[in-house]
Length: 358
Image 1: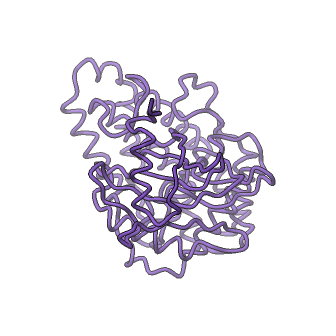
Image 2 (image 1 turned 135 degrees about the horizontal axis):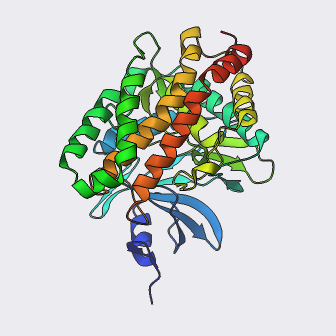
């Protein structure tokens, strides 16, 4: 009897792997379910993990060629003594990915003895997250931003997310609007508060754009950060996007869909350790970028929250969900952290000015 992983059997996955330039043999697989978007499998040979096999969600990422070229270019630069390189295994066609009747697939090398953390209570993990994110930006700084396409246009554009939210709100059932009333009111309030930020004077960088803590690989042996993973959203952006995404998952030890908001915290010692990690690489941000960081720590959880709320109102068409109201739970959790970050604005600016010197 064939083993089935998600929507695929092991035989089907082995057939797909035969289309890549890797040793022809029968592999086994483990389904990795942490991501909301793509289908991801760890590939084993004789119980040894060798590769990551991924089916890219073409409903979310419509420019697969551009997305894969972004990753290909970045991977060539993302290597250093203190940054582990991941490589793409080319398809037999020579392309960096496979176009198959079941979708678009890619194979990447697996970093042995690596692990991820959804949350942390340890300052050393927060420090390492800051260090590796800074290293990522330093390694990609020489790259021309014009060589990178926007895999999701206007991904962090507040005005676009506002328009999508309002459109979903207009279509939503009265029942859903009643259930989500407090989230809707908070969204309307924050859209006014956050609209004042002008990022026109900030430099464009090649950003990861999804630097949540579990998109960082750590060594199981040393707990040192190794590299960033899940580069599908790699495109131009501003550093405060990556800073804010990291902050929301590093200084809060609760799950993203935590329903008990008493567990959602803003841990100052973790924030300071994270900023120390950024600073450990030396100066790589200009004054205006540093001044925008606290705003980013408020903006990013709110943006993720309003996207989850919009998806809830749209009957869950974007994010994978495990139960009916999970997107609303994500939204309410993210909005609660937004409130806590907002209350710590002065504190964040004080720490940032001290440790990053603006």
